Length: 152
Image (cartoon, rainbow, N blue to C red):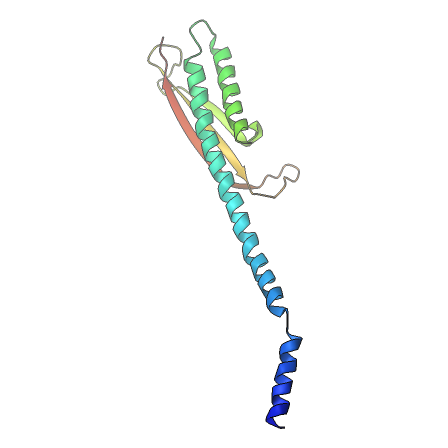
């Protein structure tokens, strides 16, 4: 085999593989890009839940304390729940994803100087995974507590 024949063979082999770099690049980009985008979606969902739980607990505690003396405790509690649900909805979270609890560390919530605390626990679903029946996919659970002092 002469050097000219070898050169011709190499040149033909180079022509047969034209365009394979593009295919390899696209496959590699897809294999790397999909997990990165999925990771970003997960981090964004956790961050939104953190902000939502903080805002919801803060608004619920404020609504309870600033409800006024002439408003019954049950109505103040309902207003607080509504404020927390509205804060969660601002971040695209439903009330089903969160659990809102009220506590009074000093025992009472109605007297001046009593501390009223609201805890909001948000379950962050795994991105792009639907719920199947009663099974819910949960990535993490974010909890936030806010306390206010009752003033008359």
